[in-house]
Image (cartoon, rainbow, N blue to C red):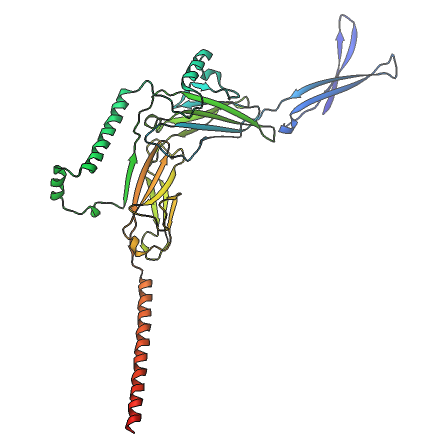
Length: 411
């Protein structure tokens, strides 16, 4: 704090006034410096001698704080994949540590998304929505935050034919399994008489595709909520909901961007929607012996050229082909399957790992090979040798008793 003074001459009054300035300087403002500042002045009036005239002034100092973090997550994740019906999907953009609350908006593949704001939204981006009459008509037709899936419109004929061709192929495969092998199949089998077990690799990957066709121009619903934190900053959660179309949304880039007066340029976080593509499995130990504890773990995925990770987070389910797991359960959830003290009967068993998220599902099979354990065999031979020695010792004692009895009778 420092004070300065200077004289000021008013020409029309021919009077000189003294001007006093008192300055308070805050070199590095913090959040606690935000608030009301007051300046109080006392003036001694010479005409009334003891009278003091008091004056005061005030100003509000507002501290703005840029966002500390921004992230995009999937609501209700992990979630299963449905191949028979469409489902709604929600992205949540979380912005923390900002003051005042920032402006949040979404982009898809670099283009601003035209959204329908919901009634619960505390704030929304004006440039993202159309006129109020158009929004009311669209909302009345589709409904807000409804559990029902949005109806299809503006269908793409190419994608429709592609989906129908996939359905036709799946139907042919199903009929082939029900009606039995055809003649051509029998002839090819006779020409190639190798057993099927030799054709099964240790890892088999298969994928599921949706059996429905969804609109290529969905409605995007936007809702934003904000909550004050204990330090005076705001936490904002912006939600974008639409009817998911795995055929179009797979490998789509969604970004959440934030505008704030304390930022010179928008702050953003982006995610790429991707379906799991064959999880890579690792087995430890690689050569399991009878009695070992085997761990089969998901290490990663076979990623595409534009995907760096699988988003949303997949859920993993383990099953044993043709039977129950070692503990008697039908399935196990998690990234790892633990088989305690594997018996020899598990040799050649196939285990299936299913990875799925709302964009798709994929299965990976791995085969367990169990080798003989020399330590267990050595232990068995040791027990057999001990039993033979005991039996031989008992026979020798019996012979000695018989001989002693015979000797006594002769004398």
